[in-house]
Length: 91
Image 1 (tube, rainbow, N blue to C red):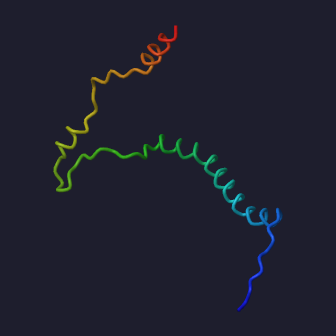
Image 2 (image 1 turned 60 degrees about the vertical axis):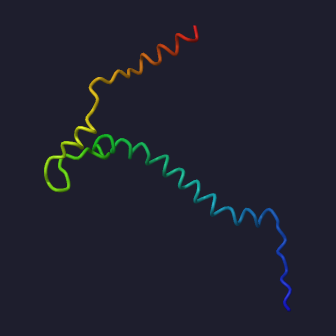
């Protein structure tokens, strides 16, 4: 029967094992911080989001889909009114 010896834990051993993990974590954070503004600028400029369908699977016009997903022209949301009403409550 072989008895395994335990390696004594010291600070240098912990640092040596954590260094690659912390380096990769910081590199990923830095890349995400750098590329997020670039990606969002391109996404808004090129309109990379999902667009509503015009044609159905069979090839005819998707009238029901267009009716369901039509933009509401009576939208009354105005951000300045929300801010104004909230700010007046503090007076």
